[in-house]
Every structure is written in C-alpha cells, then in structure tokens.
Length: 93
Image 1: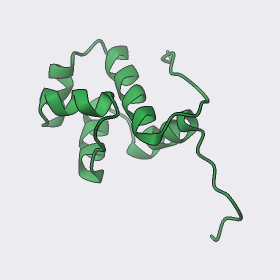
Image 2: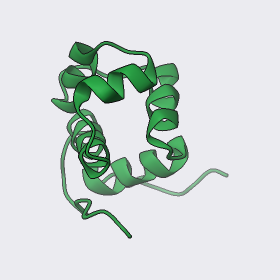
Image 3: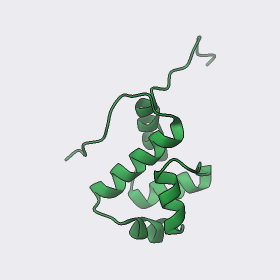
C-alpha cells in the first residue's frame, strides 16, 4: 500500500523536507510526540522541521528516517522530486 505523497513541485528544500516528513508521520498515524520518542529528538524539533523552520543535520535525518523505517537516500530522493531539484550542466561523475 503506497501513501498519497505529494509529487512534483517547486518548494524550497527545507519546506519540501518538512512536508514529506509530516506525510510519512501521518501515514503511520503517529503524533509528533511519537516520532520524537522513536527518533530521540524533542517534539518541538520535529515541529520546526515539519514547518521548514530549521534544517536537520545529517545525523538527525538518519535518525528520523530510521524511526520511520525508510532509507535516508529514498527519503531525500522524494525531497528532491518535491522541491523540483535538478542539476544544471553535466554530471561530473
């Protein structure tokens, strides 16, 4: 069963990350308190991230994704899509 996650768009990355985080949390029917407890962060931090008012560290991204049961790389690809991120120019790799 797939969640009705938003697709495409032009949100700034912090807003896209927060919106997607909220979608994943609500899909699991979790409160912010539940996600905070499972990830080891304060509810206020989860709220600020969901609102796009703070940027999570790499460590917190991994911890939150682990609590949600999703690979960080998959989550960040969803953020890229939601924010409309595209590289300009050629890929150096």
